[in-house]
Image (cartoon, rainbow, N blue to C red):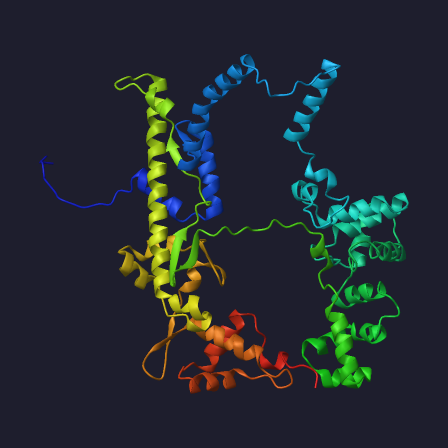
Length: 495
């Protein structure tokens, strides 16, 4: 084979580590960004959290005034003021103790947690907030230990509690539990039934039920017997009647229960006040916090978007460590500081780029959706990623990343940036209407409808057509289902 040298030209895309970091920071939410910055501050000695300029100037002023203040006090001690009355102290040690106690009282306040439960129940329960989450199983096992069960009944109760799901329902049949317990000895089905009745008296009310009807009956049983129409509500809490209630077949329910429409309505309202998932009151869940990245305000009649300064702290380079870097030194310590300095500069530059891109996109959205901020969702304009990408001169993928998990605080509430993007529907005059505006119109029509005769999807399509918006019935159904609005047959109330 003959060897030769060839010169070829080509293009290829190389993503540098700095670009990878910038892309990764761009798609982080505000909470994730704070965690990322905190980890960087803990691992990189060249990074530090910068204070505000006003705070730094105040600190420098206080530092400069310290020495003169001391000199003034010294001069005042040497030159006694003749007009100042002298105070005689009989016991100097007692006076020193009183001064020390006064300083202690001024410098330290009693902890809030000590008085949280004593007087004001509206104060936050710090112990409960900082304690580890308690599961429904732990809550039931604790009550089991407080109940005078025998050893065999405790074994049965523990097996039953293990079979209760997160909603509070018994997830298997009693004969299956009997087969499981038969490995340790014979157990009668009546014993399991008796222990189950004891567990059904535990907190929360309705726990250990085998179906929805039994769960509702357990909660009705705990109510005051003098509650109006509690007997009719108990008759309504059967599998057959609950199926009719779910289907809105009020005529058959009145016929079966022999109730007048007002009485049936009150019985249904009593059922609706009960909890169909009692385990949800105990099952601990971690709340998902939303921190707005952008704040929108109206300044002199113009809507303006600004970044939330509390989302991420200001970072800067630690000058002390930066001065420790020696140019041309190849020692391990010097190379480490150089690497950390480079990473710190990359992070600060990536954060600045992220904030600049986010602010550009947010201001473009506010400029295009001014009608929404003035008049509400009904005035939302059609907007897609391509429209914003053309204005800010960026790729659509970048716009998608910067609008994911980013939130905007407005006078109308907190919205994700993606909320302001929606497809368009043609109108009769040749214009376009936003899908978000159509959803808002559908929701408003359903809220204003008659509960006796709710409007159907076809009727909603006709109403919108008279307003110049051509929307098919199946599109109305799709928008309605996306807002969790049931069909007209299930929105009908008792006549």
